[in-house]
Length: 547
Image 1 (cartoon, rainbow, N blue to C red):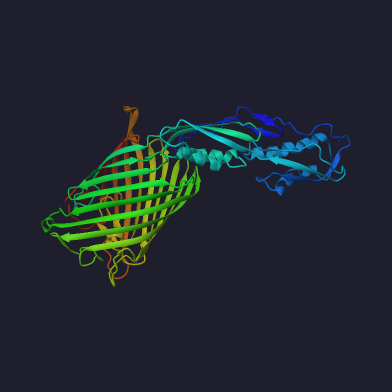
Image 2 (spheres, helix red, strand yellow):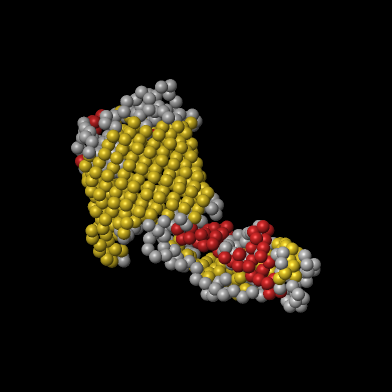
């Protein structure tokens, strides 16, 4: 560690951060903590009898105000001080900067100043440090500017090592980066430093086969498909995501493409999807009831606060949804609000918020979305029935706490409130996988709804190095689910409109590469239901792989 003319030039090394439990590696390791001060003052300045300082003037300071600096050196004013004590003023101000993270900033009192020995006004020059250059190594597909631009924000003058520390932690959380290390070394002049960064990229491509029985038995409950995702398509953090799923009576396509638009992790996303269905459940299969729907969205999301332990962001989406239904090949309005040809069109502007808090043992996430249906782009408009004119609010909360290795407690809520009756595309669904287990999928559909689910994961078997250095763990999962749905206005509520189930799950996991789970839910509130599939019986299967 080197100090020139009262300015500290530090060398440190940044280590990868473990963000999900366990011991955290230290980010900074200083090679030396000793500080040597070399002042521009010399003993040719005659202070043998001392001087009385009326005040200090400060120039060059932006990190601290004149008042803050004056308070720090107030004990040296309005009394007689010696040359040694005047040197101490430099040291105190420099320490104030370095102790607050400004490690290459400091203070000097230039020689040659003229003053009245009995009422001296001494000028203290503050030299605030900077990072003159950022060098990034180790990247393969990810562009250098992606990392450099995000670090330039954190290394703005005056340079603060704590701000850099947070920026590196946030980058470590980025899914495109597996590990990041950094070293800050002295630059050409004392107040300048050079940041050396080494990055190891994550594998940005994912191929995910998925199998579950999370669809309604009316279109075939067993759902199989594949999701293909590339999080760094052209090298600047743009992501593309495609998925295809089908059942015996449905096909679903979804796709999205997102583009980062600034160094603060703001992004624009384009998304769309198509779904076609055919009723295959007896006795309605002979009626040849079919339908299809599609949606298109454009969204903008911007984090307004992003720290290693917390993120808060705002976004807006414009969406266009359409659905059509047919009876034996002819248009027919099955859903409430559809026109005579079975068409429903919804145009909406959605304002959403996202808040995440991360701690070593737990994660809290709250999402909120206000949807305003508008009369535009061919939207459905009805006099009495539900249409595209609506206002709704949806809020989703998730809390996850690590109880022990491979042991989790999970609590989730989902709430929707609407000011009017909603078309089917906007309604709240209850029952089945990811909802109230013990009941058929989507057995209750209402304008408003509340879902509460809680479960705990406990390991009962561990197997080491089962495949490609991946450990396997078998977990038992007790759960409790509760849901209630209700309508607005004159449309009656379903009876009963409250669902509650308890049950037990068994899950096999191998890291992030494979997950297989079976749940059995027991309904605590009786409803009339068919028994045409496993999920009608309260049995749910879910298998996911990631290659």
